[in-house]
Length: 253
Length: 259
Ligand SMILES: Nc1ncnc2c1ncn2[C@@H]1O[C@H](COP(=O)(O)OP(=O)(O)O)[C@@H](O)[C@H]1O
Ligand SMILES: [Mg+2]
View 1 (cartoon, helix red, strand yellow):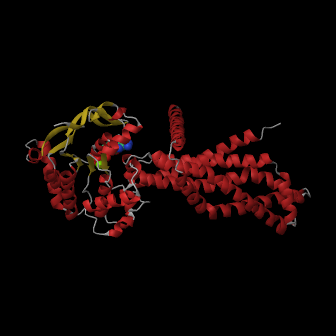
View 2: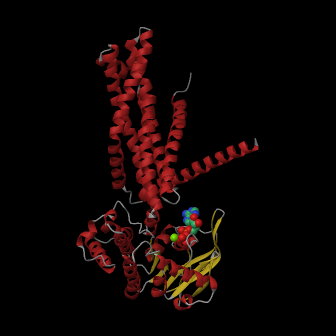
View 3: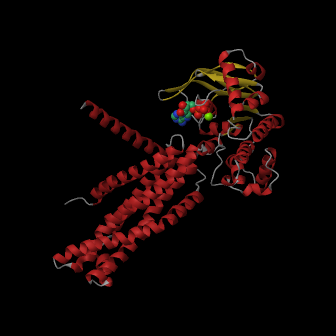
């Protein structure tokens, strides 16, 4: 197995607010890797570091052996052509309709004709389960439900056919049926496009139902990494508390 | 005493950091603007959006500042029995000083806060990160067109405001002070040299650039949460008005050397 992302001895802080200290993480090609951990601990920061949206002070982030922090503008563009991110709230562009949103990366990275883009947009919307409605392309984000917005955002991220997809809490704020649908979609993209997925989530069914390996963020690093099975039934008190605590919360809802 | 000095020191520090950050962003925006594609369509779109949306406010400001100033001068000149000179007196004050400054303080502040609110909510909802993650440059896509558009739109609105201020002035001169509108117009235009128009336009252009970069910078600097958008928008109002008033003084010194 080859590593797609390797994070070594990473240190990241915002002023006095230390997020990562001597952190290590490795994600293998083709796997679905899930990151769990408490709110505000730095899970989103981890994903943003990986695609060079945030700088880091010390340590290494390697994408296929190349240091992300040393990349110039062109190299970063190239990185982002292969690695795409699905943001927590979807982050669809309010001023553009779904078609323009979904094809944004195509317009940046390729010279596709309008017809080709239309084809690709249809294909992607189909893939995320929004293909049933031909009008959807011309709707604006404000006119979509939460679940549709997340799926449209997902379509935007896969339009460029990335090798790696980073998901930031893809199911937060969705009802169980929609959450399940997103989980299925992550598995389907993995199966059909052979992408490597890195998923940040609080949703334990997603964490254990979709992933090959799970890492738990604790004390500014990832001390607990194992197969989904191992983490789900871990005897380590911190992990057990977190995993079961989440389950309890879920039942309270 | 020490605490006071420290807080002054911190304020100066923060101010310098702010100005420094903005300068860096300004340079980045201009550099990104020169890279192809030039994004002419985006700039044009912003000019139309900013300009058209500002016309009602610019209209009001232009007419009323012309009327109020002419009234003031007419009143003062009447004391010397020189009310016929009201056109000449109003011309310089309006064209060189009041129209550009009032336009920047109202229309400019409105443009800047609009940008901060728009970009701030894009920042908070991670749309700016999304632009970068999709392979585009947010500075080029968002800041450059707005900066360029504000720099072009404010002088245009200023020219428009000048025409209205002249009209407002003529109205007051004619109806209140019995100075015929035609005579007001002649003395008004007679008083002005090309340099006066130029100094007004240079001011308006500078103010446009400042409002554009402040509005964008504040938007991009927005922290987390929707209340953060409110905070940075409020700061934008203060920042643009202070910067404009100071810059107005500096430019006045440059264009009107004493002696
Ligand atoms: N751009 C930023 N500037 C300053 N602080 C940040 C920034 N992004 C995140 N943080 C801080 O980093 C910490 C982790 O944030 P985040 O990664 O969003 O947490 P989560 O694990 O919930 O995704 C928080 O304390 C947040 O305030
Ligand atoms: Mg997060």
